[in-house]
Picture 1 (cartoon, rainbow, N blue to C red):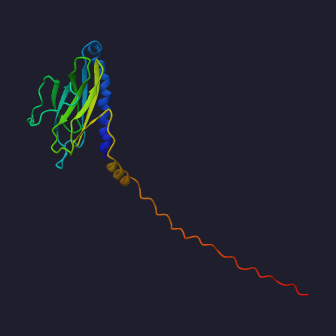
Picture 2 (spheres, rainbow, N blue to C red):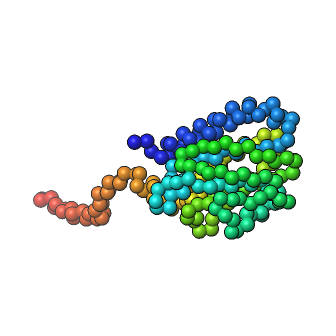
Amino acid sequence: MTSFPFVRRALLLCALAGLAGCSSLFSSRGDEGPRQLHVTLVGGGQLNNSGGGPRPVQVCLYVVREANWLPPAGLEDSSCAQRGREVAAESRHVVAPNQVQQVLLPASGSDPVWLLADADFASKPPGYAPLRLRVDGRQLIHLAVLLERNRITDALRPAAAPLAEAAAAAAQAAPPSPAKPGRKPWRKTRKAPIAHLEESP
């Protein structure tokens, strides 16, 4: 049976390998044209799994001009925030488990912008916040977003697993080490007294 980490790595490698093809595809208009963001969305094998099994999730992508911008609360499940003074572009997608999607977003201008990815997970972890990536540069810029369970991470710079989870996984994977035999306490041996023999006359 193929392990999920292998499948996820294979999906991610295939998605990122496609960046080279997309780069050549848009190179004719990316070299001289306005700035664009090529975003790869990668759905993990346990995407949006809150106990009932993996399932698709709605993802909203925004190109925003303000670093601290957040989508307004109370949006309907099937809608994303609309373009405005702070939102240069927006796009809605439904990503399924083990699925890869390619998105092209306009980001005209040369000032820094931010890509904000928000997902409508069935159960969001404590302290959940949308993924925010600062974008500098011009022409065609490649980004990749990984969605796994109820988290969003930068697929090009994946965050390390929490220390507690890593320690638990290492403990389960490592074979138990054999117990070392106990060592007896060292005792200082006393030498027997040497008898002095007297020579007979």
